[in-house]
Image 1 (tube, rainbow, N blue to C red):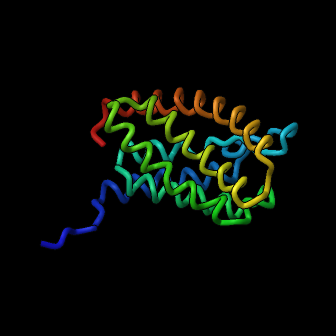
Image 2: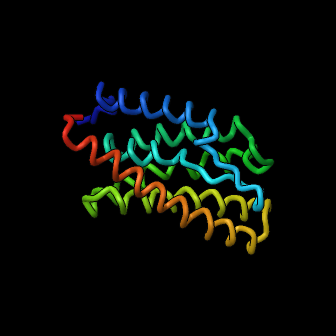
Length: 169
């Protein structure tokens, strides 16, 4: 028997709304927060991806992650984000990792932490592997951004999911 790969209206709606929210975030300083000392940006752009994965599953998370990746590719805040292996590829895994972490732990905070670290470590691994930054710089950025973004995303995802708990989504 052939399985259907069609998405439900609910999942299309979740992906569309959170994808649109990602696009809006990418055009504001809230989506990419500059850290001038390091010459990089902290981001909140992965948060809609995590929420999409929790609400709609890994495919929805991947679609929203793709929109996040494409927005960072088009924005090109630094030269290495012009490389789709840095700006797009790692973002495709945020939703998948967040979804399965949520399924395993039945809580949004571990999903937010894993999703955030998937983004940070995925992007910075590609930055290093592609030769854009030396390892010591990557470790410094990963430590600062990874911890800060994990805390921020955990709080925001927890609050959003708690607020949505009473609604049938």
